[in-house]
Length: 50
Picture 1 (cartoon, rainbow, N blue to C red):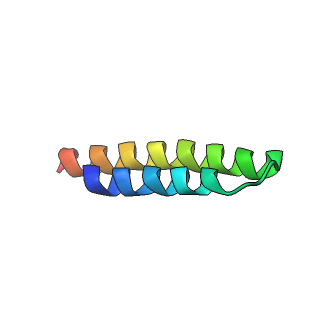
Picture 2: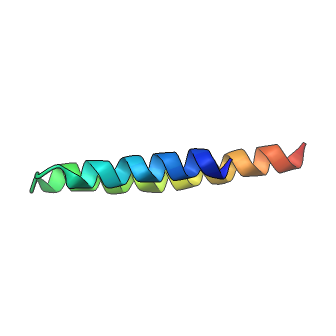
C-alpha cells in the first residue's frame, strides 16, 4: 500500500506547483492531505485486522 500513499502525496505536491495564491485553495490541499492520511490509516487497520 505504500505506493498508493506515495502517489496521492505526490499528487498534492503537483497541486502546490500551481501558481495560485488563493487561501481557500491552499486550505483545500491541506484538508485533502489530512483526510488522505486518515483514510490510509483506516485502510491499514482494516487490512491488518483481517
